[in-house]
Amino acid sequence: MARTDRTASSRQLAALWSIATGVSLCASSIRRRLLQCGLRARTPLYRIPLTHDHRRLRLQWANQHRDWRADWQHVVFSDESRFNLWYHDGRIRVRRYAGERHLPECIIERHSGRTPGVMVWGAIAYHRRSQLLRIVGNLNSNRYIREVLQPEAVPFLQSLPGAVFQQDNARPHTARIVKSFFAAQQVQLLPWPACSPDMSPIEHVWDVIGRRLARDPRPVASADELWLFQRKKKNNVLLAANARQKGPEHGLA
Image 1: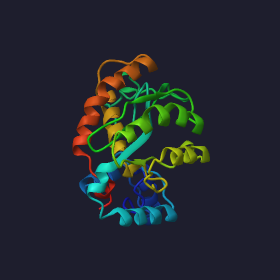
Image 2: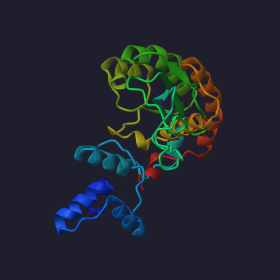
Image 3: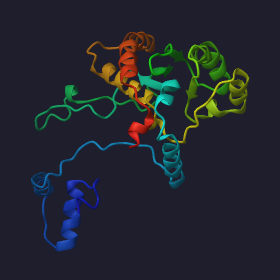
């Protein structure tokens, strides 16, 4: 039963067992038996839901680029990411004794509204990185051109001979005005399958920065302070990422 429904709780499994066999078992007995079998309750891996077409296009893209080698050195991977003021990604655990569940030191607060934070844009190439840009408010196609592409992305691409620009399929990136801008600037784009942020190496950069923010013992009191903290942290992270960077085909093998 536990292998059939991996999300079933021990209480749910006890109820199902009672219905199926007529024998009553308590939840603690179920948990003990599952532990003996090596089945432990763990935090699940979260992913974006993919349709059949999403999977087909991802595989098609991977097959088209599986023989790339030196070509990856010309690709500039870009993305936006949001870092919250109070960082909690589900990996945090607390150590407590029985009956301590409601102790203040054993509670992680979760805000019901939008958590204050900082939205950033950045790009990495094989041996270089762009400046980290702060984006205040909602990013639309006009702001994407005016605040990201014109001042930073295009000059960065022009400094790299033969550069190919990668971006995801967010609406501000694929608007007609943005496509016209790329054409006017002669920017070569890398076709990218929808719902595929996990295929871009820069996602690992954001993850490392987020982990370092979570580990730092100094509390961050404001979005401005978080932005300054990110700028201090990102250089070493991006340098290390550039040194290890490989193309997305390594994650699709």
